[in-house]
Each structure stands twice: as C-alpha cells, then as structure tokens.
View 1 (cartoon, one colour):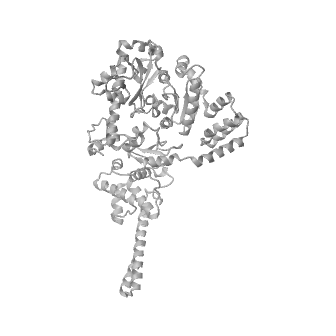
View 2: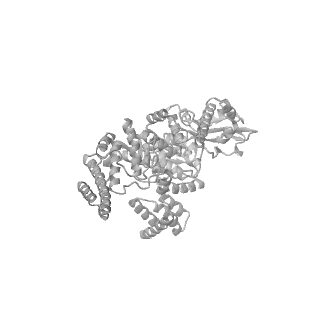
View 3: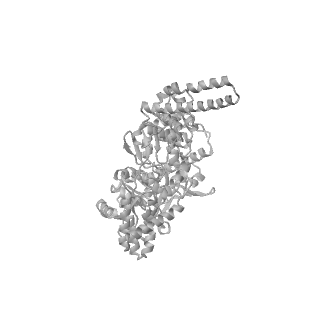
Length: 601
C-alpha cells in the first residue's frame, strides 16, 4: 500500500467531523455526550451504534466494530485505507498527493475519474437545457409539467443534444479518451467510432447519497419524430462504477426531509420524485425501475425504518410493490403501500390533486399484511395458499403486540382461528432456523469484527479494566507503572494495544482517533469499545473489566490487587516446585531458603 504523508493523514483527521460524516449514512440522535443510531453493519431494531464527537470515533455494542472516520468510510463504502483518506481529503479540500498506486489505488483513481467525467457531463447537459435553442422543446415540456427553475437547478436536470458526438467532443477537449467514456457508460461504440449514449433526451442525473453523480437517465421527447421507435427511458448501464441496485434516485436531496418526517416514500420514476419535490413533498426517492433490492432497503434504513411504496396503479406496479415490500421487510423496514387511483402515477396524481390530495392517499396507506390480503382475496386465492404466502411476513414481525394484531387480522380475513395461524408461524420459524444463516455472523466475517472479547479470567479482566482506565485517563499510566512496572499486561491482544497507547502517551500525543490509524484489527475495535465505555460507563449494563466502575479509585485498586495476587500465586508455584526438587535432593540449606521466601510472599 502506498504510504500517505503523516501530515496529510493528520490534517484529514483534524478536518473531518465524524458526526457529520456518519450522519450522511445513519440517522443519529443525541444521547448525553454521544450520538446513537441503528448500526449500518448488521441488522438490528434497537440502536447499539454510538458515535463520540469528543473522541471522534464510533463503536457498535451489538456487532463490536468500531474505529475512526477513515475506518467508517472504508466499511460503509467498501474502500481501501488510501481510498478512504483520499475521499475524506477531497471532502475537506485538502491536497492529496499522487502516490505510487497499488491495484486497489488504481481502481479508486479510475472511479474518481469516472465521477469527474459524470460531473462534467451533468454540467454540460444542464447548460444545454438552459441555453441551447435546440433544447426549447425540452424546456417547454418541463415547463408544462409545472417544474420551476429552482427544481431544475436542484436536480440539475439537463438536455442531451441530438448530435452523435456532442458530449464525446466536449469531454475529449477536457482530457477524456473516447474508450474511457464507453467504460463510464457515457458513450457507446469502439475504437473506430464512439458516439454519445444519450441524444435528444431530457437528462436526469443520478447521484449517490453524498451527491456524487454516478449515472444518468434520459427521457425521450415526443417532439422527436422518431420517439415511438425508441425506449421512453434510457439509463446508464451497469459499469464497474455504477450498480443501480445500490442507488436510490433523489436520496441526496431527500435525506433531511426523511429524517425530519420520520418516513420515506419510494416511487417508481424520475418525474414522480421531481414533481413531488416541486410540491414540497421532499421525503421521496425512486427505485430506478420496478425492482427493489435489499441493498436499497439497507440504505434507506440508515435514515428511517418507516417506508411507504407508491408505484403506478398498473399490474406491473402492483406486482413490483408486493415484491419490494417483502424485500424491504427482510431488511428491517416497517412498511405501508399507497394505492394510487387506477390509471395514475404519483407524478400525475400530485399535479392534479396537490399536497392535500397526497396527504389523503398517504393517510389511507395499507400495512403490508392488509395490502397483500386485499390483493390475494381480490384474486380469489385459496385461503391456505394465501396464509402460506403471508407466513414470511408474519414470521418477520419482531414486536409481540404487532404480531398479535397481524395474527388477528389474517385469521379474521381468512375465516380461520388465531391458534391455527400461530401454529403455522411456529412451524415456519422452526423450518427457517434449520436453513437460515444469521446475518450478524456474515457481518462479523465481512468486517473482521472481534468474535469474543470477554476476558477469559480475572487477570485478563483486570488488564482490560486498566486499558479502559487508560483509554479515558491516559495520565494514570505513570501510577500503574509505579506499582506494577512497565510490562504488566500479559494477554497478547491487550499487550499490543497497551504498548501502542503507551508510545503516544509518553510522547504527549495521545489521540484515540489518530492511534486507530496505526492499529490492526482487532486491537482497533477494542480501543474503540474502551473509549466509548470509558466515556459513558453508566450507559452500559456491563463495564469493561467486570470489577466495578472504572472511573473510581476502588476499581483501580481492585485491578492492581488482582494482578499482584496473580504474580504472587505464580511466584509461589515456582518456589513450591523448587522446594519439591530441593527436598528430593536433600538440600537442607536450600530448603530453608525457599521456605523463607514462601513465607515472605
């Protein structure tokens, strides 16, 4: 791995606020001195993920992963260390030097180049929409849909000229090769001939949650004489730099409103979302097609678990909603379906009925079970088959109260007993336990999380307790050394962490967020845990050493006493072995000396 200059690394650390960074991915709430939220690295319903603005670290008490801002970005975006630092440097406006690139670094550089090309393409398309005479029909169309200049600017909606090579020529003048643009999805063709992918279309830039342009969607104009022979929408294809299953259109603009309202609405098309935002309904995103994915569900769960689906009122939309609901429920979302009136989509409906009409359909949204039951009974399905189809949804309900309500609803609609439904749920859950791999186990393997960090005995517990004290009170190291010496930690993992901490403390440079850059796993995760627990011990049901409150002098005395007694026991054991050997060889003088030493212990 290329070495990053220490001054650059330190500047990135200082200029990056971990709360602001993580808030882009996780809905955080202030709790005491720290912030808490739902962990993005494993499935959970109650928040166990904690962020310390004071220490600039994060830690999850559920899956035991933690670190600083660099580590968080590495995990959540699947980046290398260098990629993560480069990304954070760009956010903070810090110069990041060219490094000798490894294969991973080269991949990151190509990804950034793709994003740069996309950003330049967005600017090109947007300028064309605003200024080009050729774009007059596009401007007329958008104006007819009631879109204001502010909304066009917010979404950076654009227009792709009809000429075959407008964008390719423009980007070539900025240093991009035609073959690159093919790889990025902006152009099609080969070395002999390359031309623009999008031509004569209204352009909707697609961004990730951080606002980086990753793709485009192009809508054909009816003013085009050949529009009927073309697909209505044309999208960027899947590339090494874009995976549509991991993107939700409009999320970067909707994040704040989703957090404030407490729920998100998933729509189907670009115009659905743009129109919703035009009318002030800003907690809306689009799934870029009818198929929802678990990745999209996990992304939404960073901001809320309350999700509504509002798809077009056609057969494809209805089926897509049913599939999407099941997928989202598996990721932990609480779901409802907004049933659009026949023949309308959210775009049409909102423009006709406004925000008041939207509030009414929102209030009439059905729960997952209500929706699926209504559709199944409408189609006159067999009751036993309907119950079988609903079992995954019922079994996924964690709340006993919600489950009881669900059982009553299904039983009443299918004209069967509560106990029959409960029995089928128990059977289904038992069958699933035989084949289901726990997602938390997958997460732990993926993120190299400590599998078990409980002390194996009292001595290890005391050593861990001392580390916990030092994590929050590094000045106490001199006291521990004065009574225990310098090399008193014996557990290998704890000794590794202690020595790294001691180096920084001795230099007067102890900063946990910086130290995390130097530690390997699992020592880094352990330090994160100790910092969070030492910062708020009262918030945890178990303390770090298991011997009392680590902030008290009594706890410190307990830790020291355990280690001293262990040393004495070991010393006594050695002397007893020497005594047995001396007695065996009839060395009476040596026997007396050893007995005296034993008495002095």
